[in-house]
Length: 73
Length: 73
Image (cartoon, rainbow over the protein chains, first blue to last red):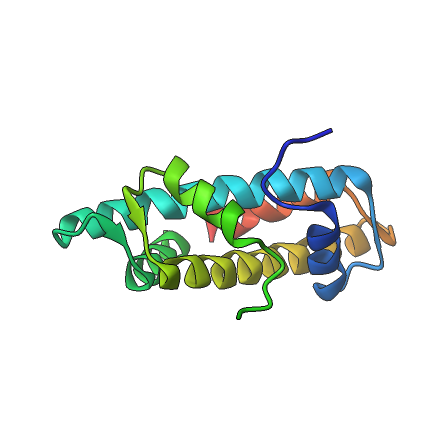
């Protein structure tokens, strides 16, 4: 059992929504790990941006800019 | 209320793990949307890769390669 933050049913629905005909169990596990990893990376950038703006609270705008920076890389 | 696939508590923990001191409610919502969006994009690539390999089932290897391609972009 994986101890991911994300539930298998949610990941399964996302993969079906993305057009997957069938989804292997290993795909669910990989996807959970990948999304959690990406989430932490975006969070790190966002925390850095909040800090840069002199705030202790990470806001939506920090996440938005962090995602943008992350995807541009 | 947002109808994301991801729970607020999970997203909060990911942001804390990433180093956020405090987390605004709007940050949680942005993060849910961003991760679901990224998940669908990775899933689309993975489904395409499975199809390319002559499979109807998306496997872990498809996700791995899709994530790699996604992050390289």
